Amino acid sequence: MSVVQSVQCFGRKKTAVAVAHCKSGRGLIKINGCPIELVEPEILRYKVYEPILLLGRQRFSMVDMRIRVKGGGHVSQIYAIRQAIAKALVAFYQKFVDEQTKQELKEILITYDRTLLVADPRRCEPKKFGGRGARARYQKSYR
Image 1 (tube, one colour):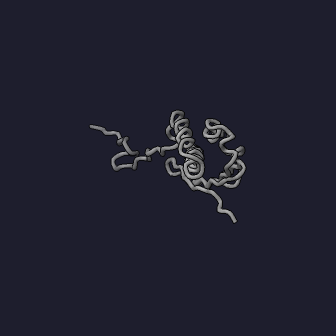
Image 2 (cartoon, rainbow, N blue to C red):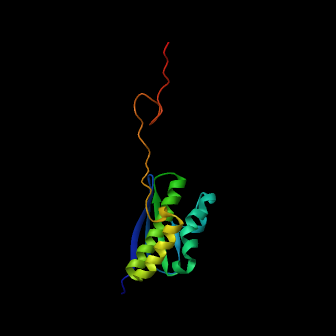
């Protein structure tokens, strides 16, 4: 029995976390058990396709990806998924293909959009007393 070549990577956006399990296969990409073509919301479907469109379908033809995503809202989940896909493919190429191809992939992704490989550190700021939000204060009256 041969050992299956696989890597696991995650993508994050706000509180959404997507874990991509990437193994050698024939080009299947599933998100929570559903094919990537059926991602909701439909308007953001191209955001999930971005790593695939940038790098070309042929680079994904030798890998299968299963992605689990939870937490956050719809948009955050979409951004977490696209980051997980991009990071998983780069990691797979580094581990099982060659360093030069990995470097090319990384270069293409970073020049297009850095958040495809690097997580966005921004988080929601906590509310403070004396106001109705993080920065807004209650109105003050003098008489």
